[in-house]
Length: 506
Ligand SMILES: Cc1cc2nc3c(=O)[nH]c(=O)nc-3n(C[C@H](O)[C@H](O)[C@H](O)COP(=O)(O)OP(=O)(O)OC[C@H]3O[C@@H](n4cnc5c(N)ncnc54)[C@H](O)[C@@H]3O)c2cc1C
Image 1 (cartoon, helix red, strand yellow):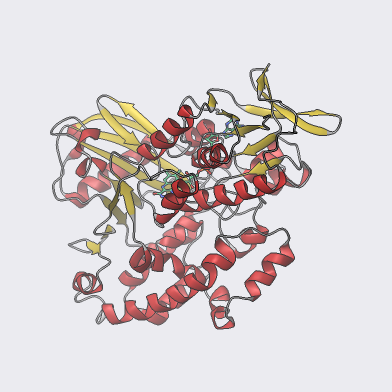
Image 2 (cartoon, helix red, strand yellow; image 1 turned 180 degrees about the vertical axis):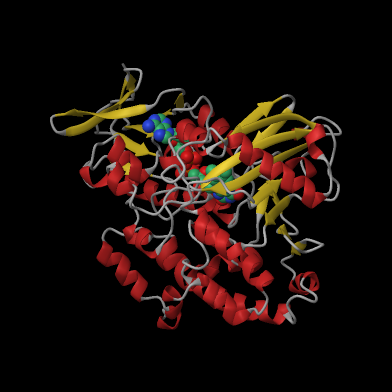
């Protein structure tokens, strides 16, 4: 029996999950070519001075999408999830105690005592509507691909019309209608930043994310650290004979008789295959590697991109008992901050940031008696702030603020500290302009408007990952791997009569 060969460009979650699916449906000759020296893409690992840091994602929603992935592949799910409870903790400037965000609305109400009266009742109302939107769109638009814009618009038209006003109303406006305190509005609007915009510009339909947080499935992390997602999948792929080629960056297509036959790497090698799956950014790849006119930097730069990450991986020779696992630290100027952070040419002087402390639940990721801290400060992408020679200034500002807020002099306890600026993120994983989550999710960049899963010109080229459909975040990328695998199975079913052409490394 002969098999069609598959070349996957990028070993991010999208590339790995697609390889897992295809290898489960009889595709035998699969090669993954990866620019970095380790698999995982943004979901990566940094091991240093006895500490183990997850580089990017620290939790996820819709855990059942991972269940679906392994079920689809005929495997028991090897991942052991751990629920986040509280979901997270928010430190708001000017408040003497943090807000712990519980899914249990009675407990949540207590956190907002004296701030937002009758919060549980208001939340119920807010979430009821969010749930209706989630249920109306989950299968109709989110977990589906569209062969044309018309098909997408048709699917949208099937969403009950009563939700239409929330397409045009901002999330902030909707929050104002439900909650009277600035504190509740700010905290429940944070999800909008994951989508690449402020709550003042994010359509209120995205409140469906609050439903996934609070009601539907909550947030989860994985026992053993987030990188065990990658390790589990890679382990299976290696057993199945999938080939990994690291430190090879694809830079150009290789054509024969007008057909896409392979890709060339920066170091002059060629990888041939029958089918290609691109896990590199689906918009930037079309322009920068395929040379498509419509996707050149001037056009890419006009698109909306999510904020860039400024990350710090800090190891302490002490522990911080008063902190929870997931913590947001926000200042007192939310509106100004939200309005300027996307396009400012300066790093913020009073940064807003997220701190994750994985050693709270996985002690093995730090030496005994130590704690590992992951700081994530979203900053403008490299279009607006291309120079990061002042990275130290922002690192200092974050550490200063953190010490002040938690009331503990952590700097004298730092035994390891690594900083990745947006330039590092761009250079390591080819993130366009250093944008952390890829293309944003405005109405004109989702569904049928988002870069497609099937290439416009080459019938044997497909895309998977954050900047294609359905969107960014771990569960979305896993859904995308199913959608793209279905396209491949349909277009290139494994057939005995097809030519034997395994991936050849020339
Ligand atoms: C700091 C940070 C925190 C995050 N936190 C969360 C979170 O808590 N929860 C969540 O759900 N999501 C989170 N995300 C988003 C999540 O990480 C992404 O949506 C997801 O990992 C994207 O996976 P991907 O496969 O699309 O892309 P990537 O992970 O970027 O993988 C693409 C791979 O392709 C490789 N590549 C690119 N170009 C080439 C080329 N030309 N040749 C060869 N290889 C190439 C890259 O090196 C990379 O390994 C976070 C992201 C960041 C940056």
